[in-house]
Length: 392
Image 1 (spheres, one colour):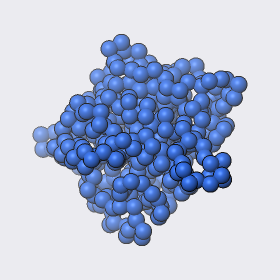
Image 2 (cartoon, rainbow, N blue to C red):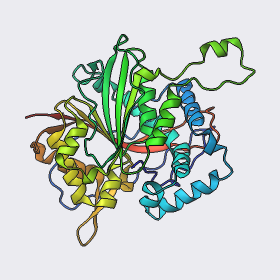
Image 3 (tube, rainbow, N blue to C red):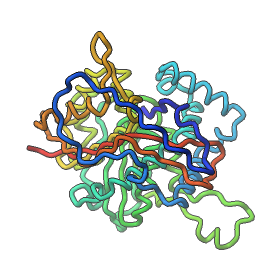
Image 4 (tube, rainbow, N blue to C red):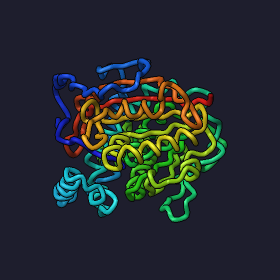
């Protein structure tokens, strides 16, 4: 469910000058909400979250260019983008994703996933101290990959399994709910900043058929970029893949997470501590599927997630992430709904108690000057919340 909501709101090409920071949107307060404890931290400044080094940002853009060069160069590319945009603005997500042609999914990934990937990689760097804690990072590949076992689900096997265990690295596991191209690219970029000591496995779970898109991008991550025939010897000698194939493995499962039973979700999570992500996914679940179904999913997650795991939520900020409740369609902020479900009076829900360890209401990711990509890209503004699961 990787969505591009409010695409026109941040419609700025790769900038030569930094755009002025917009005024902070007014929050709509729910009527007499339950009393909440203060969050550990809150920021509206992009300075709170680091970015990848500019050369690595450029390298990641080159990876997207290599993975999706056929569709980027296709004469039908603008028409494909218009079809996707029209479906998104009509909120017809089946047409935009689940029932979309492969070329349309490639076009979406080539157009809107690069900025997301760069922004997500910065978020992973920002929470790196938690990801690198001993209880989350394990030797080798871990005891299981946490793949859902539902027989009718369309699941693709782990991609690019390690060729050898002789170079056993520390390994981190990630379950990306609603994940696709941006998530695997961001995870790969994050791992590359820790090479060769850290490897990773990512399980991407989404209702749309993103498997071929993920495979193209993962292959590009593990392949040295094409060089000009005029490249000098130094450029050829330094040309290398973003990270070795053995450092990043993946599994993709096509499944609607809201339709999964508690046991099926538990199987996807596995037994080892891991990072669970909902990146520009949770608000879409609230608004398209409803608060009841989304709350039920979060409670199943709380009941089955291994203790010590992290939950990372990134979504549109402020009034862009609100869900309507009741006959009067009273709107509640996504963050309030999430905290109300996970941390109700700070009493444990079934299974675990969620500790909020990072929270930022509004953060800007701005593209660095001088980045090159075949088409214009946009800056990104988001809210971010990080939770840790603990057993009472």
